[in-house]
Length: 109
Image 1 (cartoon, rainbow, N blue to C red):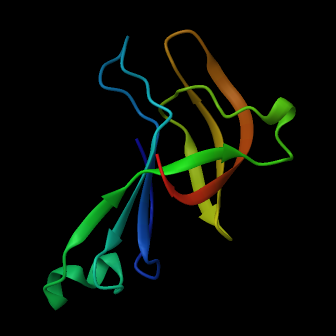
Image 2 (image 1 turned 60 degrees about the vertical axis):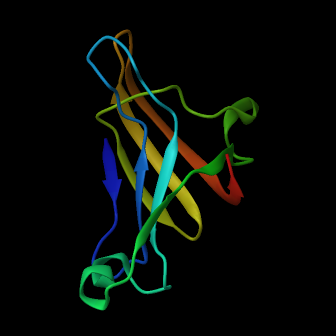
């Protein structure tokens, strides 16, 4: 799975992945947030909890035909300005060299 997040961020994001080599590919996005509004990295020292959220993923208007990416693993991703930029990866039938810009909604899926 791709893991986005660093010491200065307030969330950790997981997109896609698989449960096995030939099955279980995912297009889900999970966001890990600290319950008390602190940074995820500080939750252990402040005694705060962490909660996983599953926001709705929407295609950015710049994506062809309003599509979202195929399920994949082994990709790269970076979050910026409330969006997720995704590149490459593969599944059992394709090796992707595509780039996607995804809108991250506050709504839960």
